[in-house]
Length: 483
Image (cartoon, rainbow, N blue to C red; front, side, top):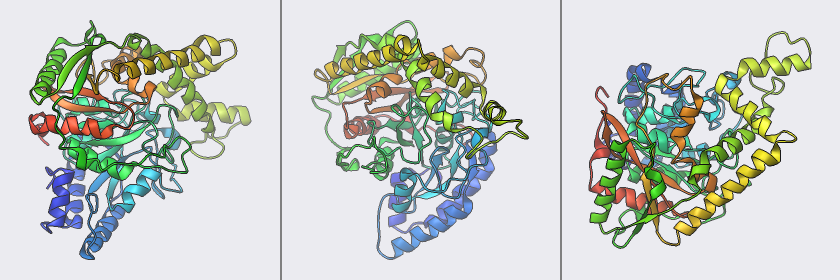
């Protein structure tokens, strides 16, 4: 049963081939057997999962239906789950049990999804390798010596290893799409505001966005359907109708205009990945798409702008973790200043401390205009580039990452080298655009992803293109050896 997609599970449950309880028990047993190799989960919620599975079976017996009713999933461990540890991958929140459910958690539970557990992640979502977690690094199931990508590496590794069919994730600068590329999955970052951030512990509030990680575009459509929608609790949530994403999967690609930015193919891109990207372009061209070279001239400024804006917002958001109200508190503080210093120094890991310091510096008197304000101006230029491009094309296509997954520890001594791996993904977050990564081949036995970007609220277009590509390719069906 573990090889089934979400769509196949929905059909199996509807046809009474198995029950949600049977499926849940099988996957919990598989997690117990295989996850020690991967470290993809922080917490398992067996009792909750079994009670939700029984409830889903009862609802189906009473005539209810739905693609997510009885479907097993997991949540990235920054979505608050009532009464369950929500750690954000940090010692700071190791003892925190959320008093409420995040909107995403509540919506998926109402749809009947079964929560198997909370997945591992880079601490406070800060990282591109899933090595900064207080609970240890996550391993890539395609090669256990390599990273799975971050910060949603736990969700990605669990789905790629067939421990469950799909999981929630978040993307601040590529943290859904990059792990999807590294683990041979389909991952979608929706338009900013499409999915509620209420109850999603913040890293950088103007960049964070929740989305689905699954094996296929069809499964991402199902999970996004359950996640998306206006939320009055989130002031950045957009009151925009949510289309039927599954209904849009089978549209023709005839005449679809696909733009390929010339800036994507510079010196930093592995030529083997460039070849796979060009192969995917040819495949889409065969399906009727029209290919056009375009330019995104301000892309070169995106990384420095992002690594000013995101740490600045992080330094503000993480100031609430002070050892006073909740989370980690140091032993025997001498006074209030000592409480603050030691609680934060002991509770936060090195990468989080680094970004807090960078952000605090960028926001400090005398540097705000020179760094933060200038970065926001660059952000507008990046958005303007995309708006100009979408006047010419319907979709933008390119590599998701410049390189395949690197070995565990290979970039630990050089944080900037790790930051540069986000070069193709962060622009979508700066502009607030939807982006999707889909499997497109392998380099040295490691998966490679191709990224699609679309205008605001055109997630359906991304899913349609990816689904049609997947109907005509088999990269997404490959399974890592041993799983």
